[in-house]
Amino acid sequence: MDSTGPTLYKLMTSFYWAGLAALIWGFVPLLEKLGLAKASALAGLFYRSLGVLLGLVLLLPFMVKPSEIKSVGAKPMVLLILAGFMASILGQICFYNALKSGDISRIVPISGSYPFLTFLIGIIILGEAWTPVKFVGVILIVAGIWILKIG
Image 1: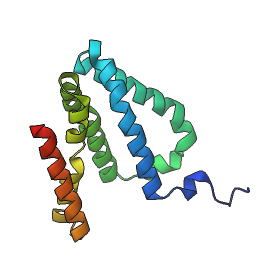
Image 2: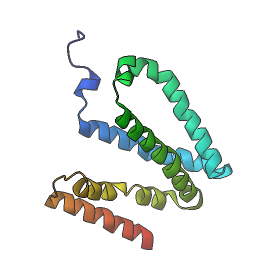
Image 3: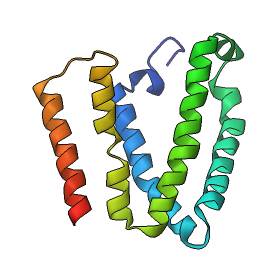
């Protein structure tokens, strides 16, 4: 197929990308739980971050053009750096402490309830539409968290 034709990257819809992310993120906590058996949460975070750094070093030259990096403005750059710090450092420290001391089958769904918070933020701050389908989804998330908490 020529370079103008469809590629896997172009054929993947947001649904398939999200599904692939869920598959990867569903498996990773098992590796983290096993890795934390003889490591502190901070030592675990250090080694996980080395994995991210290795991934960046190996993949960045093939995935991102220098012009794309330069085209990001100051505000988006600061927001993305802040997001990376909050998710990959602060959130991961909390997650690793929970994972080290709790059951993976309870910790991962509870810590993965962030879609509920994102739902509220999307409506309140971004003015996104509030629909009955979204509301039912949020009720299911909250019910699942509550069931895991009491179980």
